[in-house]
Image (cartoon, rainbow, N blue to C red; front, side, top):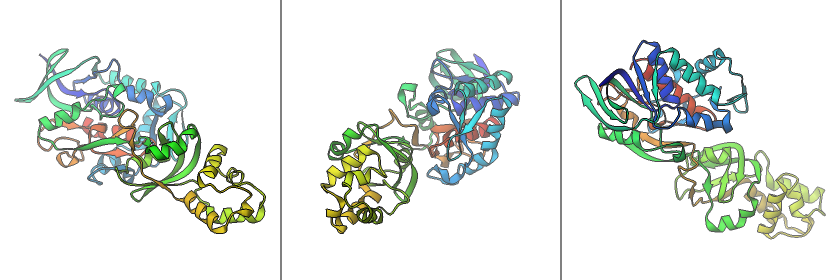
Length: 392
């Protein structure tokens, strides 16, 4: 039976960070990854350029049943620590917007960096490896795997959540948590497009591909960013952010003209350009196809001078607060993250170790900590992996 100090299940962002940190401490570390390669989610992130962290990481940018749990790990391994690692490997990067940092080249560079650090630390990595059974032993854990039986003192679950199943996502980590008596909070898709109901879809289906800057809000949380009409509903950064706070039956409100009093503007247009058709007036501020469709939907036709002030005022109000009830989200298929997961009540915030089972750790997306869009979830992966890697 192969024996290791630490076995890490999952070769993603959190797992590799934990492995290289533990390896640097001289621990004998094995990473087991069920896919054909490590870091598949890293590779596809950020359009292939990996939004690896954010300049403005703050605890308030994360969702968790315990809003304080993630503070310790994030404070002890910051965005600046990971940026220093990236710079040490000579990886060029840039800030895209709102503090989001991307590789100038390819996300392959981030995976290569992590694998290189693991190799330097003597970490053994095995891909195409499945876990068949885990049980507690006298000193640690015994694992039955497709590579044969193994024993370890510390076991780290870094298997991720349910988002993007085509990348190999499963509920493995949740099953292990329950096996060892941990509570798993309800999970759902986060950072995911929203689906229109049939009536709204019929009204806006032809706008697929139209995008514009908006301010979207739900459950008292608002985000100013881009919105994109899709063949089933809406997406874009502002909508993905809102989706993490949306619950079925709740309305989402979108300001199509953020920073502008649309009612006052339309009345000004009536005075300054009285002969303009409404859709042409709207097209000075909105994408042409959207302006045309809105003009058709409100059934206000003719030059704006013929339109009543109260109708223009009401239209402006709706432009600043378009409210609708999403039918659903696109689900895990296109979700960037999984909300919920292993309850933080059963974990140490400083080490990520189970309070119930000594030597058992949970890190990364499998834990009930979910960041906003923009590199925050990768920073949680780095920070939680680092926290566990210091002690496993």
